Image 1 (tube, rainbow, N blue to C red):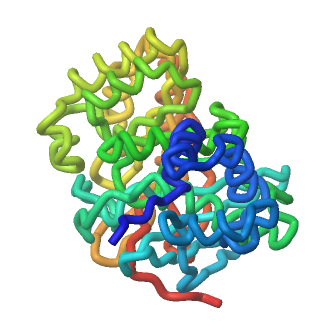
Image 2: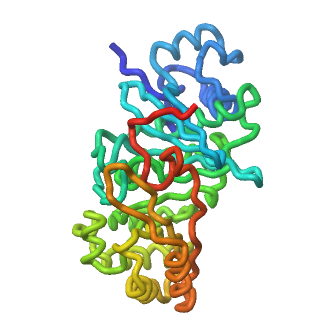
Image 3: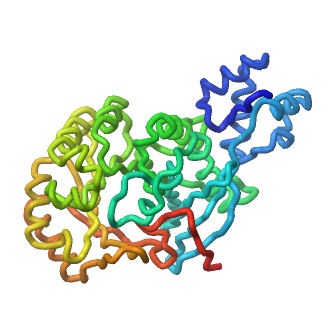
Length: 352
């Protein structure tokens, strides 16, 4: 039995090579890429400029990754969370965040579950089940774009990608990088590199490796504490890559790419929101080309965590600002449907 190839896991060069390997002209790759990424077609029978013979051949040796929508929840702020089922029955969540200015940002998962074990995150409670394939990563964007644009595929287009869904993106490095290439490429979805944000809990070797790629994307580091003792408690990854190592990698990344890093800081009442915490964070980030995204922690049923009140949040931000650190408080999106930062998991109830 021939193992079928997922064409949506191939970059354009790979698609050309695949067509050559099955005895077809390379120009067919451009036709197929156009059907997948420009018209949203995943059924070979609907690719009308391919002969019946080629359509039948492709059905025998290839497929295009497709996600099945299981449930959908819509927030009062317009955010939509989808629960998708993969070909093996595993499930992931993907979030669409439409904005009034016309942007449609999709929060994409890179793994089923997550193995990082951060103590404020619902996905970590699930544990890691497996990495997503390149096609499954790209497929989330294609599926959401199809759902919001219908037959007029691409209008309104997905404009921004944030790799902040389920899983640690850099733990699935190779599949992630191929997905970014496809999403960014002009024969793919042609989403600008600076409209792609990649969030990581701080895998130092992969951050250094990513720096060498010299991509113009937005790198976001989930920091959440400015001392090793506190970060060890909140994020087990810190025991492998302590703050000093992480900051050295960030410094290398900034020098190599000349790109500003966003540091994400989830504010948890009574844990990391004290005046001293803010001062230590300001000291740690002094001199870095960076921006701090303050995220009042989102509720997770099994975790006894509460967000600080508005005055404490503003005071924390003000201390950073007085010490020369640019900071904003992230606009809350979708927390009422458990679609906000730290709330995603494979179990889901529809609010529709």
